[in-house]
Length: 437
Ligand code: 5AD
Ligand code: SF4
Image (tube, rainbow, N blue to C red; front, side):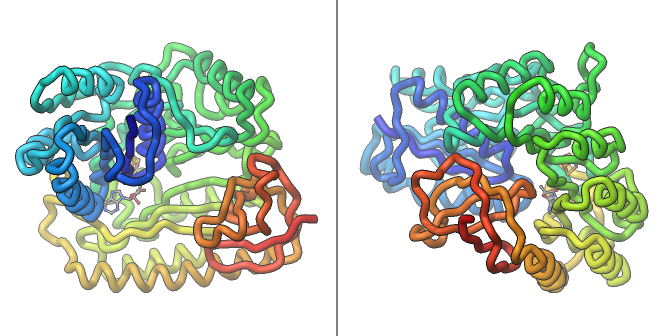
């Protein structure tokens, strides 16, 4: 029996797919690339922007003939998009070849839902309204055996005015520090060398726990009480990024010098309307603090253009912030109205063409900055964790620096999962090219 999982969205979703893979493996399924050969296909959906939603509908629709050819095929749809009741019901009605619809909060139920279908139940739609505490631990089948994602906090309570995530991922629920440390130690025993601590906002960690612990303290414990070689974390909300965190990152060698710090906009008016809780000045001051203490740190960000009411002056502020901030990389998005969020109700929405024109302009500015920053690394030696074949060119392999930059190296199948010293010979906006020394 074979499974195929199709994932949309962020790292949290990717990690949820690893949990789905773990559960299916436990049921005796094995992974397969071709949908035509699968016995079960699971969609893990995202609704953070409209185009993610459209893609899901299109892809699910395209699998209808497969189900007609093979009525035994089980098609299940879960993830954030299904956590919106109306959308879930509509999808279930529209795509009659979908057998199971489930949500993010009842992810662990999937095996039992599959069993019910196998026992003859026609179709199932089961989505829990809200979280019932932490999602229970389930087996995880990871993307490789040396890098692991580890959720430390589920949910988000920031209510940025454009964002649907708090509605689908629920309130903030932190995992107990002892459980996290146990899991890190277990992963080390299994041979993992790098962990990425995940949360919509890792800096909120611990606020809901009885223990008096915050994110910097958790990070310190993991860095000093375990033998893990590399620790990453994402995402950090700028409003909660403390000096304590910067100091701990600076002091501990195994904490990677990389901060993903979404700024979203460079205009104070727009930041306020987005309910972000910081100003451009405060944001830039945080970058200064990071770079003072950790000069080699890479800083990446997320930016939205075309938020309702964004004037050309507001947009210029974003461009000017991007130039000042000198990000290593930025994930840039055109604002997408999400039903149920305050920003979607505003009557000063921008036309799509204007949003796209601003997006193109912003990308051009950032690409140049990324290129210039990467060019400065030519001639330097970096420690690279080799991750496998290069996606674009299987004759080469790729890996990641501590700053999370992608490095292309000569083919080296025997070095996958190992740290190697690489001299950087060339650099583009997204990629470094190097040789072993
Ligand atoms: N429109 C466009 N981008 C969005 N993001 C979140 N919600 C929206 C939206 N409605 C972006 C933010 C966030 C990233 C994960 O997705 O930049 O940081
Ligand atoms: Fe969405 Fe803001 Fe929470 Fe990030 S911090 S998930 S953008 S509400």
